[in-house]
Amino acid sequence: MDSLWRRWWRPHTLGQVTEATRDRYGQDQWWKSAVVYQIYPRSFADSNGDGIGDLPGITSRLDHLSALGVDVIWLSPVYPSPQDDNGYDISDYQGIDPTFGTLADFDELLAQVHARGMKLVMDLVVNHTSDEHPWFVESRSSTDNPKRDWYWWRGPREGMAAGDPGAEPTNWGSFFSGPTWELDAATGEYYLHLFSRKQPDLNWENPQVREAVYAMMRWWLDRGVDGFRMDVINMISKDTALPDGHQGPGAHHGDGSPHFLCGPRIHEFLQEMHAAVFAGRDGAFLTVGEMPGVTVDEARLFTDPARREVDMVFQFEHVGLDQGDSKWDVRPLDLRDLKASLGRWQAGLAESGWNSLYWNNHDQPRIVSRFGDDGEHRVTSATMLGTVLHLHRGTPYVYQGEELGMTNAPFASIEDFRDIESVNHYRAWVDPGHQSAEEVLAALRVMSRDNARTPMQWDESPHAGFTTGEPWIAVNPNHATVNAAAAVAEEGSVFHHYRRLIELRHKEPAVAHGDFHMLLPHDERVYAFTRRLEDVELLVLGNFSGEDAPADVPDAEAWAGSELLLGNLPDVPDTGPIVLRPWEARIYRRTS
Ligand code: TEU
Ligand code: CA
Image (cartoon, rainbow, N blue to C red; front, side, top):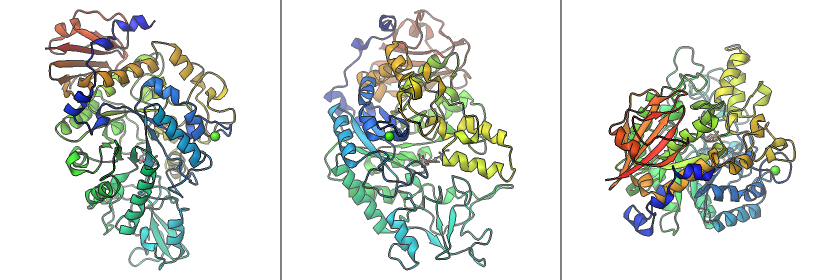
């Protein structure tokens, strides 16, 4: 079977990414030719049968990641937490939640990761803590507690009494439904929480808060971790005047985002963090800032190496193109919008800065169900989507299960959901009768974060080999056919295609460093672009439709006869015109 793909896969012709290559393209930016794999610990591998994934479970499955060829593991939070938002509500930053294991289990995992030549970055969640974190317990204890100003406390709105409807200090709406202010009856004041009421926001205006965070980061780096993925890090600087947000007709709350996204001191804080945590520290680290709402111009500043803020950011534009006024207002994707958006980010960060590339993470539904076809063409559309993403200029992120082509799950009723964002949305819209249960469920089935959080499908056994117990959320029944064991055994699988894409980034400098040039921007079915580095040029094609689609790229005749580096379908003709079959992808290479 592998021989079938050889015609379309000739690694020996590719240049080696040598020290020279690294130096020529920036030694300290090793992550430009790296691929990151994200693990969501609750759903990856359960080692003790309690139905919840854990650290020893991850350690037992590291060979799967080595075989895939990834360079870095991003670990979603494993710290002590009441798990109100599945660990993104931390009550102790320098420990491991007993559900996931112990610090010794963590050290063993880190040692095993490093022993396989991979790196591990932690999730840094410092826009907010858990309301059970000792810092907040102290802060809420009295208005004159030394840690009162570690959080955002305010009295009721001018002329109103605490607890009165609308007395919240601002009219901002939380990301998890409801207002962003919770009244603390004991002190008669409200505290700010952009996410759940059990995730109070830290007050980064307070230098003690910042120093405490930097000390915690140094503690993890001293323990050997290789960097941080920084949760909603562009929300840590707020407009201290706390103005109300625009509240459109019929909106339950105001939009506070203009007053806390990329706030007035955000660059100052990130530069201070870099200096306090990384400056003078030996090692090859990676930092990526999750930044909802960030623009290309802002990202160029955040990721300009000379400014020493972060190496790259997660932007959200492309994962909002099939959404209307809210993420629950689902719209069909127009491929031209996707090309326009990703094309602008490629162009915007071409000279300085750097992109992260992702289709999936623990907050997004499965891409093959979203932009692909998770039925008849599941494998072909999954491999096409991987090809198009991984050949862009930037650092690709693979979310657990993406390398298997895992799909959205068949959620039947609200009882099947676990995610606080989804459950709160359901309550907020169904209970007061704003929408029918079926209407809200229809949106949840497509967009809920729980689609990303069903257990990893290791094999066809009960519970997909994820646990011997009762999983915390149901396993997708399609694990009978969609699972790692079957994918690894099948050369034409999504797994081996991702393995080849990752090998290509390691072996062909043009993939990591080549200039990006978009083609066919107005084509509604074909995504096409080139990458050029010195005398090497690559042409990348992807058919985003279930029917044959001609790729009328310039010089198509010549390209058709050139070397096909990788395809996701066999029997590719070597003469033009180029017509792509349903969901087909091709990567051509030529030298001039
Ligand atoms: O996500 C931030 C964020 O923007 C998402 O919540 C997003 O708004 C939503 O999921 C998209 O619908 C980060 C973490 O990735 C997420 O898991 C946490 O829930 C959130 O921050 C709070 O820590
Ligand atoms: Ca477990």
